[in-house]
Image (cartoon, rainbow, N blue to C red; front, side, top):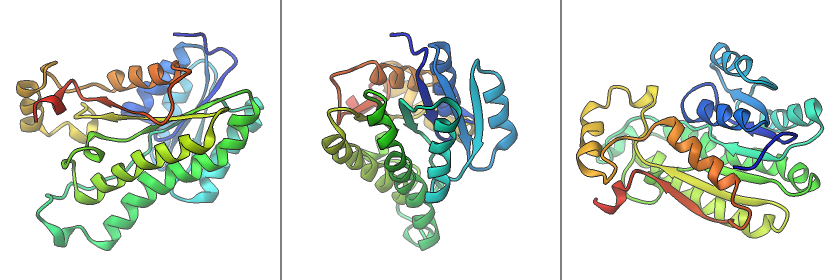
Length: 245
């Protein structure tokens, strides 16, 4: 992996899980890092304080003014922005057959965080990513955006929209900026900690015989960042599960 010293990375939703692992991975490569969360302030501050050159910014990416302020914080601190990882997301566990529980409020919150959030952040970041000699955006989608699965129908459709948004933005952001996505399968995070039977199913079914870890996804994100001729791609990170179901 190339040296990222002198580069500035913004990772949304990075107080825990995939976001925190990604912030740490980028820090290890020398990048300056903006750690972010909408509400987990103490956890976000702990992550930032554990890194070499980092700041924590509380911001709700589903609010456009917050997304703009988040990007501006990076530019004000370091004078540039090179990498954006749109990881912040939200869902509610709703069986797909339970249509009545997928209320308008659930739909609106899921879509504002999972689709409008990446849109707001990327739109605010693009002028800086272009100006500083070629940057990249990595969106964290989901296998649920590719296959009919996931924690709820609103969540799955939001991730499908994020996959398509990735391709559309890649088509217009080049040549200076690359836009890609990773699509994790089941990952061991606090959100899935009590999903024992689902983890067991993945371990019994996937070729790699286990659920993923946040570090697995962070490694994929770093790999996408380090792929200068890749844009508009959705990279599955599911241990091969989609090959067998």
